Length: 135
Image (cartoon, rainbow, N blue to C red; front, side, top):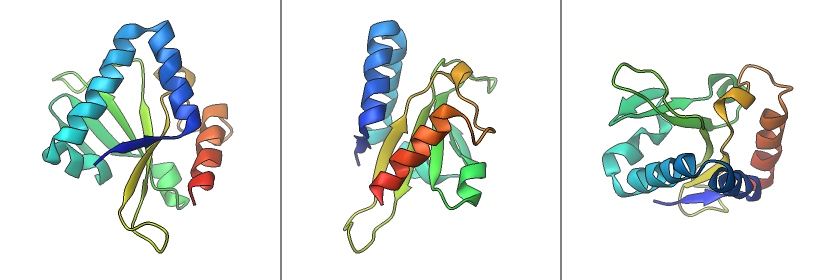
């Protein structure tokens, strides 16, 4: 399994690389760890799951609107997030145009600059626009 990055997510990753190398390394390491661990890979579509310091969850508000979007972050053993970033990704199942399911990273926002609950949030709007391009 491999994650595909949309253009805006690539820009986000490059911004992390310039602004915060530690966060950049964390993001890349988490994605490599998930891609190489079938147990973690299986959690990508869970409503909510934690394993090995990684938290996976469905973006419930968007899921109710028919958008198959999820979030990854790292957490402490006590369950608190210790990452400045979030990885927002979409799942695209097998279809006429896809012989295999796909995971697309749509954004890597800073946790303090992204509001999941606000449909008017500029990052949310960007994510939904990028998701529409995948269909």
